[in-house]
Image (cartoon, rainbow, N blue to C red; front, side, top):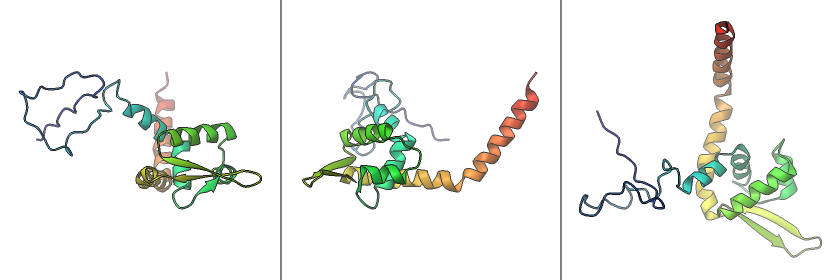
Length: 154
């Protein structure tokens, strides 16, 4: 049986990190710089943001081509103007989306993925496709669960 290694703490907390005398250095690729299991780790904010359904859909929409705000809004049914605006700002702040202002009359703004954003879209698209392809199984499991809960009620 393999015992999982305890992840290192978030660098901002500084707790539970062994001293150099207690451990031999490991290759840089095996030790993550951040530990999302630590409550103060800033990576949690990023996971929260990219784990949002709207962010995943925006990333998936921009995977193949840049688009203007209203095109994105039209293509992602159900997203409000306010939510889309906030999602794009957050993704831009995280370095995942590039906002380009074109000097035209009227001014045109397009959104595209940055190279960092492109590295994330494969995972985002995989999650989207997974949800689409497994929906029948999920709905079946939900019905079974709901039936069990209804029949177990006092």
